[in-house]
Amino acid sequence: MAVLGPHSFTLEVPDIEEGIRFYADAGLIAERDGRIARLRCAEQQRESIVLVGGFARKRLHHLTLRADDLGGIAARVVPAGGTVVAAPDGFERDGLWVADPHGMLVQLVERPADPEPEAVDPFSINQPGRTGRIRRSAILPRTGYAPASPLRLGHVLVFSPDVSASVRFMTEALGMGLADRAQDVIAFCCARQHSEHHVVAFAKSPDIGFHHCSFLLTDPDAVGRGGVALLAKAGKGNWGFGRHTIGSNFFHYIQDPWGSWFEYYSDMDFIDDYALWQPTDYDMADSLASWGPAVPNDFVHNYEADPLVASAPA
Ligand SMILES: [Fe+2]
Picture (cartoon, rainbow, N blue to C red):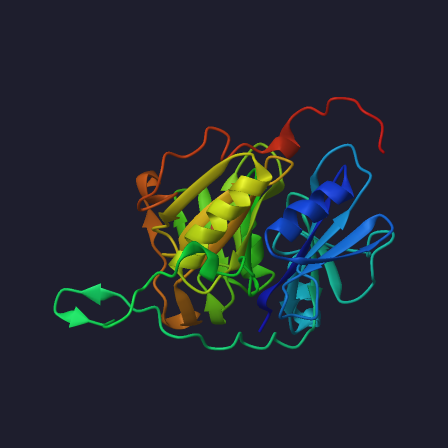
């Protein structure tokens, strides 16, 4: 085996309080210890996001993935174009640290699987010939809904200067599967057993960087409601409500304080056994969405690849 699922990601950011405020508005629980903040889902005991404050600008520090057979992975890293590295200063030596062919750091940790979220009532719709909901309204008055509370981190999308090389590393070294792709511009990797459609995805860019994280909500209505509420608080860009072709999930993206994105999603395709899955190479017309509003101009802009405007760390 190899990568089993997502765990967390770590960002360097300029202003840690700004980051805590944004993710708390998104429904995550924050704990701050000096210049480090850990953000977790309300029903989980472990962090999904780590922020390290005091940097000139936002930058992806590393991804952390749940894995087993770390010795087997270590032996495959170099043939797949990566390197095994020491834990960076200030970070736990736990697990295996590797750099992909473009220098993106990945920490692989052996952890038990998170408990499955509690089952919710089925999302019931009335369709022609199939009336699933009678004698009650589907929608409550607005005041009847609690704020969005993410259930778990589902996936992270990162930038790559060579998407095919990134996928080769994830599949050959980390034992993931290529779920689907659109040409050599965007690609989606899953775990090989009991995996959502994607755990780590890549989009083409001149350099590496963090594009978005995605957190699970219960159903499409929760995604729409949560997106609108977070947009009102964050006050930057958004893209949604819509539905992806690749992965099939409903989505609403809200721009974070640094120009990257936070996605609420529901109803993603699930791959119980990668050996029984057929990857598709989609046209670019299907690469972003099946339907939804116009895509913001800077949706796939990698701010981490822009020249750094000089400013002293805080
Ligand atoms: Fe996503």
